Length: 88
Image 1 (cartoon, one colour):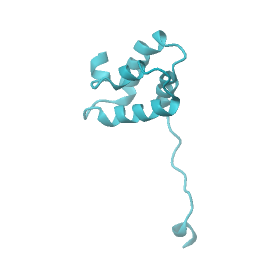
Image 2 (cartoon, rainbow, N blue to C red; image 1 turned 180 degrees about the vertical axis):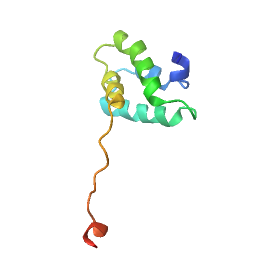
Image 3 (cartoon, helix red, strand yellow; image 1 turned 90 degrees about the vertical axis):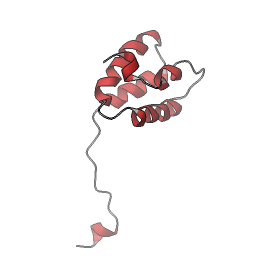
Image 4 (tube, helix red, strand yellow; image 1 turned 90 degrees about the horizontal axis):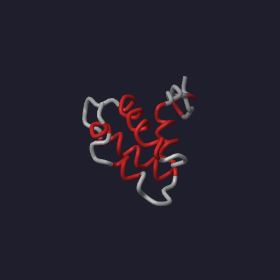
């Protein structure tokens, strides 16, 4: 996958230009990026492309950690209780 295919709107590119960006702001940008990907583009394929391009040039940037965390598998959903859990 090419870089322009991985970040078609340039959201990730722009996040690296913002001075003093926080981890929370990076998470928000990453979510916007993921929701804005065209149908059929796989986040798990695009994130490594973006990391390989931006991370070495921007050591210590919070977006590096956010994108790395985005590659980790999420935990399976847990039952959280509530009324239906008490009604058996």
